[in-house]
Length: 350
Image (cartoon, rainbow, N blue to C red; front, side, top):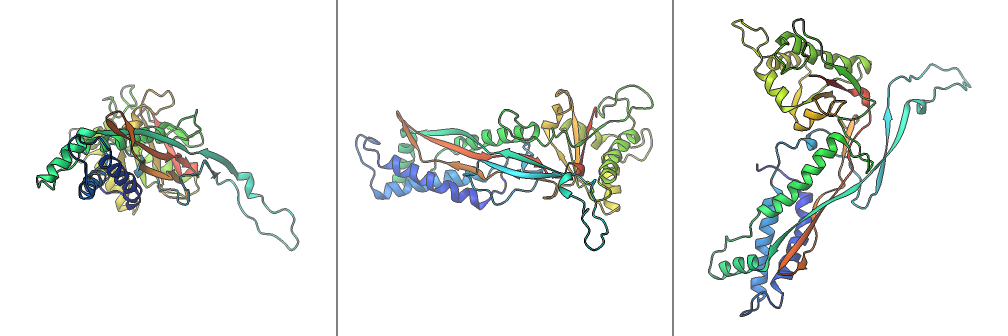
């Protein structure tokens, strides 16, 4: 699906793409009958640059990790680790007298953490025949002929998918946190239905009013545990559960067919607290056992959590491999970390 992409990525990728064109066009054996002159070199460079531009404008709608948290600024691709403080709200300042020596120590309520930044990589390649084809088309006046963009798109997509998985569950071996797996975020359990046994929103036992109660429980938990400091702005849930509540009638059997999700979003908006709903397939197996659904409600704010990504996507200069030119691709990534866990809550068994 076409979408927006940052200028930073385009600048980062252009040198490698143009370098690939120069290498390919100047290979002694790129054609047994004809050497590429400077004009042809320029044409191939233009074709490869077009490929990079097209690939980097793609967005992958089902990958939600970029929507979950603001980007951590100020980290260079050479950074190996980062530090952050995780806060709670038990502490409080006090009124003091002159020469007081019993000032509350706020550090008692701050947990210092160190995260790592890792490289994630893959590669794509074009053959010499791919380059010949474009050059020949340009010689014949077909200036719009470009290389197949799918290979670059797929190279970036595979990296994006790996980052999406890590953002959800973390990677303990590499020291990368996961937004759905923080032990300091409050864990709630969906309510038991008045009739039946299944707590699940898709189980068929819960009424629309009981599912709406689960939503409100999440909202209230964050407000209460943070002493009113934080208010939920975002709810992240499995795709199946969001689809279910988007069609579930609030009052079954009545003429009023407003759905549970419509009622919830409307009431929050009327109170001046609009909610963003993000369907995320990673939530489907994010519960404590790793086999069932988990919903996350939180305040999406830079004070609460951040995405660490010093290098989004970069294609390196091409490497000659037999009759192909292989282009290694890389990203530098530290996942998503919580700064204020009391600004969020999980709910399992939904």
